[in-house]
Length: 462
Image 1 (tube, rainbow, N blue to C red):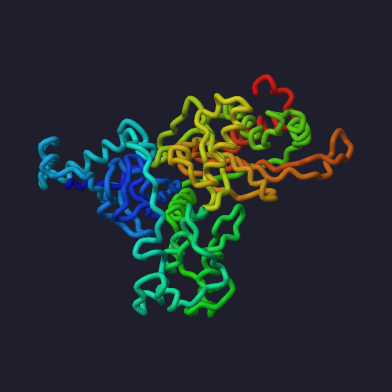
Image 2: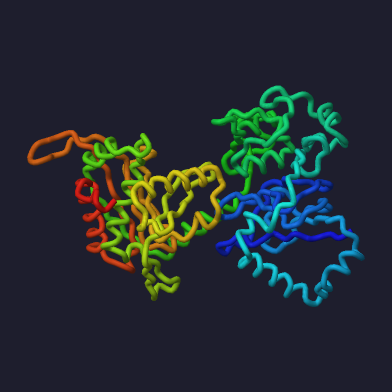
């Protein structure tokens, strides 16, 4: 028989490693070309990795929660073809001395290949039903560490050791487990808990971290087996930061170290925009305020393009672009992410609204591809949605500016010498002081303010 080794493919955008979240197949399973075989987490998103080979899985490499480098062996598949037949049909294998060169060639092929490696490698050879299974290293379902320590050999023995769990568990069920967070998956794997038996309490039937803790028999407020010496408090869990949080930490730390940022802000009367939005409907629904803010921001950037540029790492070269890739800060279960609307300056208001909905949903569901989360040249953060008036935001490196918008609330406001109730919001522009001065930044805010306060004047440009 001929075994093919599938290596972790290049996931794009310069990513060199990924954390293995969960296996979707096990040794002995039959897989088809392009069938997802594992979920991996990169610094950008959680994605399914499909296999380019069909046949029987003879080996898997890596444990759930382990970090793998691009090019490392991931899966071995036996295609059922005898070695003699394979030798007659295929060219000679690469000698051991050329393994390193072949590895590099593989990576280059993955980067430049005929399509996105996460979409497919070729024509699917038919539908193959994925076998539902327990986490790696168990039998019918996961066994607790206590069961393993006492020598339990199957799920029945495990039940006798651990006893019947009432809180947080339910009869095992088939089908996909509704878990969004890879941290929850990793916690369940670490504790030896079968997610198919966890009773979900999250919105939409999602399994949460608290559900896993309840299934383990430990509530979020209960004591644990270890006490922290520094605080004197019982430790509920001690988990490493995910790859995503480490990437965020590195990026924000670099921004703070390298960018001499400054902030200018202004209060703006959004009453007219608020009322205009109520009158303009798309397919019977109101468009988001963020779509309007995005459009007005893009129009202001046409007059102040330096704010949508990028500065070289050494700070000596400023790169300006023919257009704007607009990043939209989005809150997700994994944390703050920035989906990117490419060539946003060419989009109409309706198109911006549609892209905001599409990319926002993909980011929150964890299905956004790396290409949808990188490449922005300016970022808009509408933190007013969280009832926040203002924020000391951090520039999204390597950009040179970020616009923050606070909540739009009713306040007493002087209009033509009289106090009126108006809807007011705060705009805050954080900018890299190396690329422009306060006057340029203030000019941008002034243009944006006029657009927001008198939106009817710009209807022909939307």
